[in-house]
Length: 74
Image (cartoon, one colour):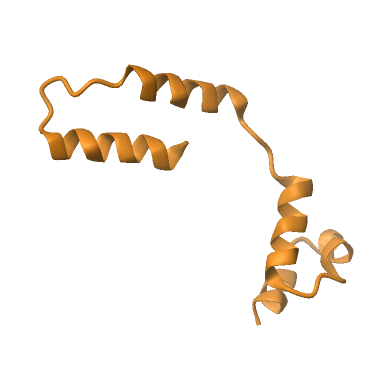
């Protein structure tokens, strides 16, 4: 069902690139390998923000949530 949905939502030009994948995971890996882009400047910025992050006046829970948000974005 997921394979069929994936084929229906991607651009028709890409159908041939996933036509012979047998599982949704194989389709995903194939598409991400060929079409995913990496934003290295954003990754560098996020790592810098994480390295320089300080608790300051935040409560422990607020600081933890701030850190977890940055980790999730990274």
